[in-house]
Length: 110
Length: 118
Image (cartoon, rainbow over all chains, first blue to last red; front, side):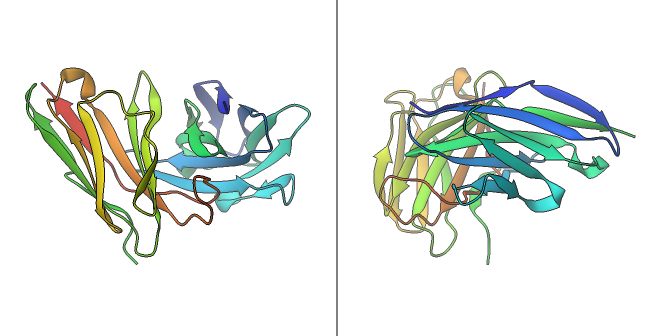
């Protein structure tokens, strides 16, 4: 069965610093991979999606993620963190149904 | 276009009572998902429908939980009887899927229904 593992339940960075949120997936067939963001008291919103068209996927708000099959990874990055990026981020995999990781809470320090 | 609409936003009830959560899909979407979010277990997929047909209900905790789609734009999640361990935020999401049983597109989430069972 497919699954995702997010390394680090909490990541803290300074404003302007690089953001790196890690996600590894497990799937027996090529998966669809997603990153979602959740702001307090809201539902999840799609940041970006990988569907095998390109290994580097660009999303909204300056985020991007790279699919690495050899490492079974789909890490999320942003070159320069902004205070408004503080939220919970979820990696998800779909081979059939949609399964989410445990989430990583991003804190941005001024 | 309005997004996914869930009601109620907050529900506080006593153990043993029946709880009904409601969800209105985005117009034109054909797939509906119910998720439960807790600190301990994160986001759990409870059930999802495609074209009003339940595709996977393996995440439904037990017989106390039931979900229906009486029409293409509306769904309910019912818990009867409710227990304190059911306390969570319940999310409904919808999407437009091309293939039966395969999720390839973006899920649009509602703002959630926060349930507290005393």
